[in-house]
Image 1: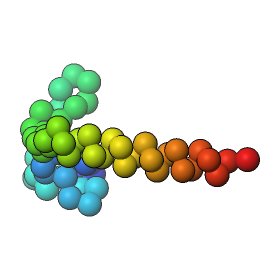
Image 2: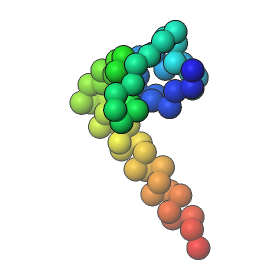
Image 3: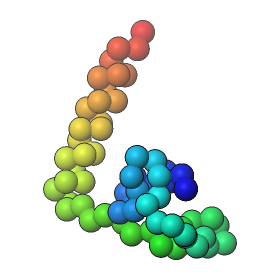
Length: 61
C-alpha cells in the first residue's frame, strides 16, 4: 500500500510496511506511529530547509 507519511515508523520508500490499516473519517491512518525527533533534530532540519530555500530564492531572476 502506498504511503506519503515519511514521519511514520511504518513508512519505507513510499510504501506502508503494514499488511492492513484502518482509516478514520478523514482518511488518516489509525495505525500511524510517528517517529520521535528531539527538539535539536527538528531545529536542525528546519534551519537546513530554510537555508536550502533561501539559496534557491537567491537564484531566481
